[in-house]
Amino acid sequence: MNNQKTNLTEEQIFKKAYGTLLGVATGDALGMPSSMMSPEAIKNTFKKKITSFLPAPDGHIIHFGMKAGEITDDTQQTLVLADIYLEEGKFSKESVAKRLLAWAKAMDGFTNTLLGPSSIRSLKRIEDGVPIDQAGTMGDTNGAAMRISPVGIVNPGDYDAVIKDVHEVCIPTHNTNIAISGAASVACAVAAGMAGEDIDGVIDAYYYGVNKGMALGTQWYSASISHRAKWALEIARSGKSEEEFLSDLYNYIGAGVVMSEATPTALALFVYYKGDPMKTIMGAANMGGDCDTIGAIAGSIAGAYAGSDAFPQEIIDKLEEVNKLNLKKYAHEFTGKITAKKME
Image 1 (tube, rainbow, N blue to C red):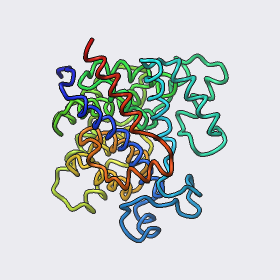
Image 2 (cartoon, rainbow, N blue to C red):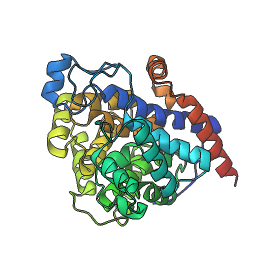
Image 3 (cartoon, rainbow, N blue to C red):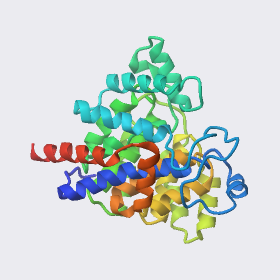
Image 4 (tube, rainbow, N blue to C red):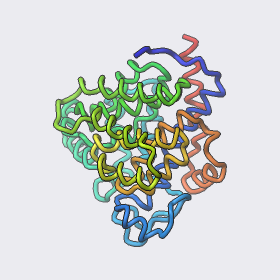
């Protein structure tokens, strides 16, 4: 696959960077109340299709007490990576380990349900003195993909640079070939969207990341992301109704924390909804499973592809009102970094 730097204008780069971050945060917050619920439980609990921000229902297994529009660890960890790059100009395994550990402690992540299984195990090992290169050698879940979009943002169209940075970012907590492959698929898809590629170009970039990532990290057991993605795309292109599509995707590909389910499902959502971020995110929120994380992953891809103009202003306003994220500032800073790199 050809690696090429983006020829987009500064304004276009800004809108795509902003769209990527909005996609993560919107997918996260819209999927928060239905996360870890079955399709049947979602229908019984919410009575109608989720199309706007809602509070977590009483007794939610993870998000009980959270407000409508509130983000979770998916967005928080994405911004941890964003801060690393914007402050240091690069991604390093040392900074990722240090900052994720500090974030986890600040959020009381070791004693609540905030952290995913790979991250909590690996960060505890790092805290106990295990070398960074060895701490994440069993990490195989979707946390690496949910937070990876900043790597795609800062490397528009440069897929080999994406792979290098993804590997560095994954080492502390998800240092297995399956996790690196899944994270690389998402970061490359985001990088393609950032470069102005069409949907087929985003799909090609996704597969490039999958295949290159499989050669990195500890060799680990898993169903093939590449094979699952092919099947997921067949489901997305089957011409079925939305309800049938979501049901087939949930039942045949899966929507759990396993990497070989999460990123193929996210890609299929993006393709079925033709790159529309809000429709893609709503699909994730109503499908069942790990709704917030798959929504964040699919939202990042669709957001990079479509840009910030695809997000309703009321969605943006609510995210900022509830979470005080200042995503526009992040997007401006990313744009400055990308533009400076283009001039080199």
